[in-house]
Image 1 (cartoon, rainbow over the protein chains, first blue to last red):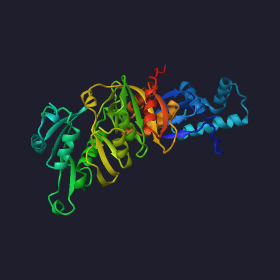
Image 2 (image 1 turned 30 degrees about the horizontal axis):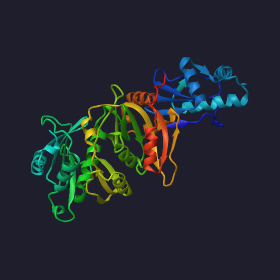
Image 3 (image 1 turned 135 degrees about the vertical axis):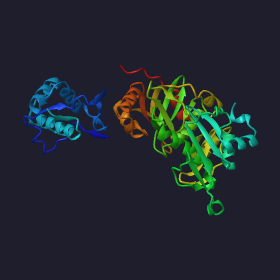
Image 4 (image 1 turned 45 degrees about the vertical axis):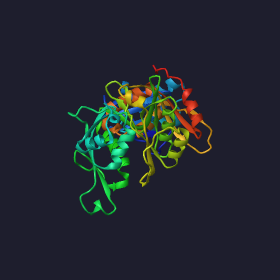
Length: 108
Length: 304
């Protein structure tokens, strides 16, 4: 079981923040949310993950449809009424990297 | 018929050929000729029903080895279906070994339940689950609660039935260690205890007899109510602090014996439990105050 934070920033996210489209693992995860946190069960790995609000929202968006980091950031910036500045984009990229590392998302 | 309906001689004879004992959802066939096991069963299992002799979930035995160990620093073996899952223990620890062995039988085999390493007590149909590592005061608190109006469902294994999420009782003697033994003896002078056994891996151990009511009502399941992570802390004020359900989920999963084995079923069962429960961290040092705090718990409304 792994908990991942909302706000990690990893300098090695350049690849994630490209035009690659991502999607949630296909039909292979169960998600519940309580308050501002999400618990996700990955059917493929058998692992359970605690996600913060932002990571959970990204996962849900990618369950609905595949998206690349840029368009995902644009959608979330509207939802959260935030300015999609460079720091925001970097955070989205970082969270995508985290979700990828947990095998909760994959390249579309 | 209950164990108390047998005379000590009849009980010893029954144990020699195999005593079929109903303990909650499970029937155990117990075979032994060890006098202190017989005495422990007579004392602590007096109210338990004898089961039909045509089926048992677990066939267990306790016996002395047939070698020099029979005479020199004697030992005792626990066996399930004739196989010994653990190394033998000193002979004096025969009764605690029976209790530990029975817990092991359930925790390794009862996979139609999500099993949480937690005490669980019930009042007005709702269960309070107390998951906690050893040393947290879980069993002490459980022993105190069941002597103050709460029904014992289990002091060690919370069983969540996968088919419907009901909490299934497994009332067995409450295991107390070291200072907790005297704490509960003072708190409940009428409580019945097995003989304290020193120098076990857990220190000094004694078992407290469960109430007859909890044994008689072993077939009555409970609904989820509260998940309370207890922590005894000397001189601490009594404190009940709500914790987010998501965090409670992860902590209960960490305290479950078979969450990972159950896969998606385990996730769904635990999610349903969390949906129906209020979760708290609970710090205490004074048992009367702890009991008052539990008495003030409000049954939670299910989350939408």
